[in-house]
Length: 67
Image (cartoon, rainbow, N blue to C red):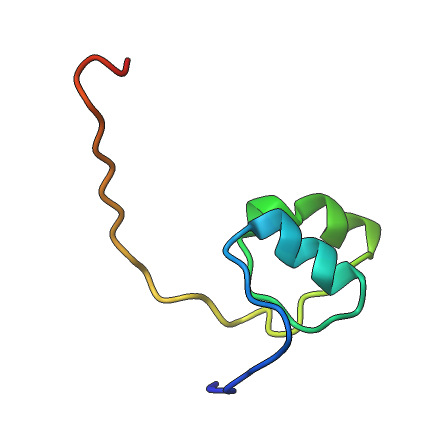
């Protein structure tokens, strides 16, 4: 499914995206871990249950003294 979307809100903050969706501002793509309580309570609904984001590699780096 490819749906180009443009709107008045752009953010990289998951909680801000969820708040916007719950306020009726549109559709979001978000990790299940952040949506769990809102999904369980019915505040948001899953639109495409069989669709998944493509897998991505994540590399985390830190300074040796930042333990």
